[in-house]
Length: 99
Image 1 (cartoon, rainbow, N blue to C red):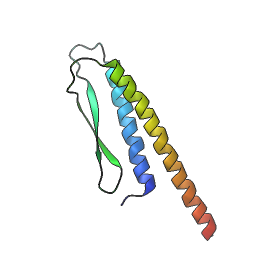
Image 2: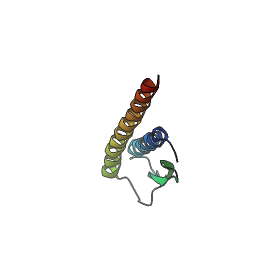
Image 3: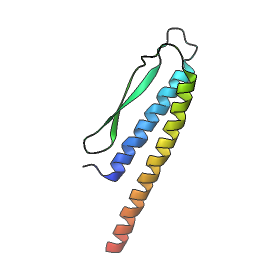
């Protein structure tokens, strides 16, 4: 089983990959022959996720999809950051009690 911090960190990394991928799609919206990319997330056995960037099955640009993905990625990153900070604060409080 992974620690809470490592699970939150994997979520932050996955959100960053999603943001980077969506930004790349938006930047290449007018590039001839460009194929959109999308992120596949796979849950890990002990917690957390792994990500893989793959070619989209959807043809052509999809700005609405990419903008929604960016908003979701931002919110996922912030939620995982809050969990990460809380975990670190709890660990610090426990160490203060033992000292």
